[in-house]
Length: 311
Image (cartoon, rainbow, N blue to C red; front, top):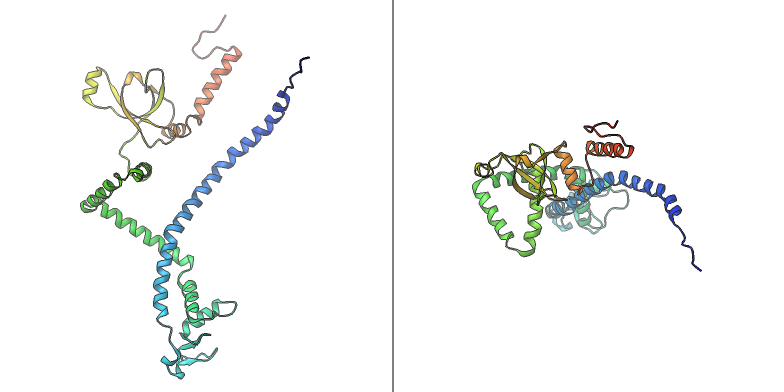
């Protein structure tokens, strides 16, 4: 006796609305969420590898300076030491709990900033003074940004000069000789050059070319009219095009094709890059609308534009 197969079409069909809703919600949520994650990652990276080392260096310098103002009790006379809350400008030192002396300005500032008991040693009082007087974030971050921009400016001016360019070329030559580092460095450099460099290549329009062989179409950016010798060899106008690679359109292939073998696409440069980065998933809206209209006409038996109407 044959056992009838249990059909799961109904169960699968019942879950389709839920699945589509979840995917739709995920598509809406992911772009802002990933944007926030990327900015947080960049901020944490800058804070961990630039801001905190800068704060540490400033902390060591300030502590070295103010630690020198900690005195022993026998180094000053008794008439120079305050007692408790006595505010006498002729007694500029205050005794800490460990018996060492501090300038009254430092001691009073820490006492005003501290809600609980005072630190037990003069060194701890100086650390709190440095942290709360000089290393607050609303003070450190503007100074850090100014220093960082100044370093970038000076580095850019140095590399623009002949000597700086020579040293940088020597540095990159060493990098390109390291087996593993050169691969990572080259990839990162291509991305940064594309994002921050002043690109001299101006894309004029987007075309489709049969590349890398006939029957396979690739999106390309027209960059110029190529070389005169190639034009003479082809006996017709030719174009220089850049064929970007997916999903990172920062690299590609520069090829020369006959102008008659290119197809102009009704999309913008930004739409072309979106199509390439998404590996063909993100199709420009007008292209989708036109394809859907053609499909609807084919299904409904409505003749497409340009075709003769049936009698």
